[in-house]
Image (tube, rainbow, N blue to C red; front, top):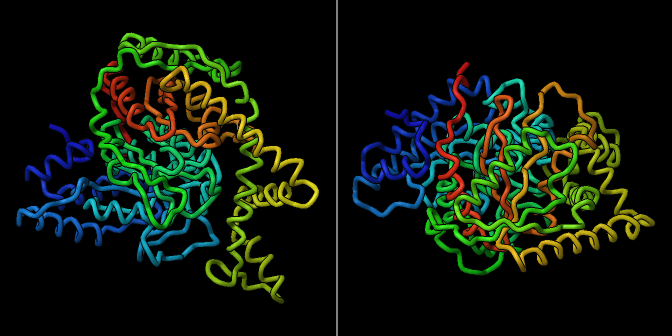
Length: 487
């Protein structure tokens, strides 16, 4: 018999509704699991144990009275530390916001609460979501549950590790250039970056507003569908969310994928990719072919410009978004300032970490007079070309298949230059620049570490990604999460 923490979100919800388990039992079991594992893994930066257990009791009482409950009734969920929640710590893992307590709920948090999910705590992340290893967090290191000498990926490393170490059933992350999909691949879980404008960003601490997107991580594609049913949809508080109907994503599960055209872009199978990763990709393509999918060669010729384009646009937006942290209105304030200007400079210098400061400086530079046309404006034109590549490819295929990352998870001790770290995102950046959805699914293991495939879809076509993703899971067979994550 499975332990409670080994169940999926769907199984937990059904057992609670059928009164085989209580929401209180499930929540209690999850916190016991966290107590046994998180000293080693380091997924969480804050927990809301007492509040969560009280909320679980209320759900059990509703069920006992025969009242209608939400779609995630009693399911423990974690959320990334850059999503504001009322009366909970919300710091984006930055010194500059250390001690900040949320004064409202982000829209996704409101939706989770309305669905009767149990929010158990905030997960560790790269500071302000800037990084691909979760090593830039002000608070702690997070380790990969498959091998604790490896990174969990980033910036949603705590979200991915909380699923991989079975500390919760669904976790919300944010994805600006691959920050859901890359850690999902590194930690052997499923992660979805929805279409830009499918999920509200209200209450998400902005990194790059035209690229950021909230999405779910979970043990399987079915749980991703459950989560999307809750968090997707229009929101008056976010003008970028499209007011279009949200399908029932669970209806796409188990669909026949015969005849689905999957594009394979040559630009994503580059020299320098780990040979074992490449072999796993080829095997996954064969499995999809066996399931009836049709593989089509496509070209995304402007992919080579994605990395420089992203690392001009994202820092530019970051420098603008982070200007609000001035040491005056809220957040960290330097105690050593002599005057107003000194307060501003020292609060920001002492409050931000080195990676955040690096991106602010790059962003300020490319937006400055004399360089705006040479860099920022040119990058916007390149972004339009990258999006046009996807639009053209989607005229002949239903979705696109790529690796998530060129390698499995790298060592925590690895000394990488900023450029080497940025290159880790080479396969994920384009989806954010084009605004298309991307799904990462575990496909195989090399050197004891998981490797994920990435499916990129048309705008607002998450349903078909879920259909193909669930079909792939069926062919791939059972996927076991790592053992031995207890201290």
